[in-house]
Length: 294
Image (cartoon, rainbow, N blue to C red):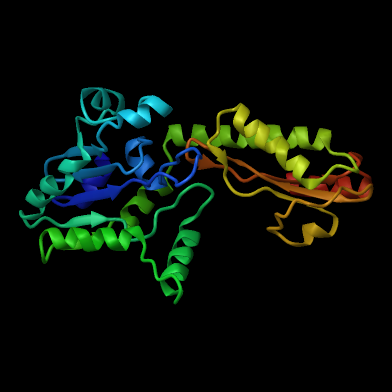
């Protein structure tokens, strides 16, 4: 956050967190929001003030009914300030009034223009999906970011709103020691899964059974889930780089392509191996395999 403050100078950076899913699935925060806050609460907001060198986190107020069902969550107040390390944590209901007073000072506002990147997603996929939805004559939905920018502008007409994405992208290119350690652990988990897949595979098994081994290791090591859908391709299916139907049976002479990795603490790795379904490398297969390892 200090680096963001340096980049925006006298300005204010504002990010909105992801929304809850309309289903009984585990919540996952948007990548940029988690990067700046480490907070996994739906509909959170954060304001990074470059002039005051201060960060304010806004969280939904306590929902006692939801807590009785799912357990306690982070809510505004001292406990949230202690756990997050953010000095000021206020109710989401205070966001509009607090922000209006800042915008009336004529400050430049920075906020992401690009659609948020969520689990198993990439920025390019997020942009393509948002564009397709908006341009679809039977859909027409605008991205949350476009609506958010419009609402920010309505608070104080004429406010200067600029794109925060280039700043965050530039910061994230260079990884910290902690980030590198997390990526290495994601790689270790993926490698451990692939080794077990290679030991377990045999003719007569199905591609989805090999994918399930990866799922087991991801959960065993407390990953959020898969970083992308399982690319398990046997025989001619391996001709397609992103084949993911996972319905074919392994045949005795098949080569199996396995490309599957975890989403671990909001970072992922990408490890791919190809091996014989019967577990035995002949001379030609062994030679080709070692070429990739070099």
